[in-house]
Image (cartoon, rainbow, N blue to C red):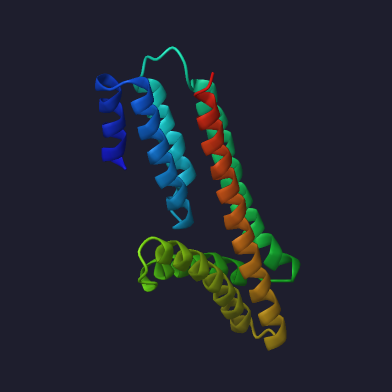
Length: 189
C-alpha cells in the first residue's frame, strides 16, 4: 500500500493529468477488489485520492470536498457492514456471545476462504465471500451451542447471521462503488 501511494505521488510530478487519472482508477479498482477480501478497500480509495489531491496541482478534477465525501461514504459502509451483520442474528434472538463469535469466525472464514479456492483471483474473491458467510453461520451456531440453545434455534440464528454478514458485505461493496463513482465523476468537473 505504501509503495502504491509513493508511486502515485511520484507519478504526478512526471506524467500528465490523464495518466494520473488512469493510475488512480487502476488503484481504486484494486481497492474495490480488496474490499471483497475483507481488506479496507474503501479506506484505501480514500487514501489514494487524498494523496492524489495533495500531490497534484491540476486545475480540474477532484478536490478536498471529494475526499470528504469519500470519507463519509467509507464510514457509512463500515457502519452498515457491522450493523447488518449483527442485526439479523440479534433479531432472531442471538446472544452477545453468538454475535461476537459470528464476527470473529466470519473474519477467519473469509481469510481461509481466500486461500482455499485455488482459482486465481475469482477463487480468492469467491472464497472470501463464501468463507465469511460460512464463518458467520458457524460462529453464531457455536456461540448458541455453548449456551445450550435448542439445535433448531441455533440453525435459525446461524442462518440469520450468515445472511446478515453477506448483506453487510454487499452494503459495504455498494458504498465502495459509490466512492469509486464519486471520484470518477469528479474528474469531469
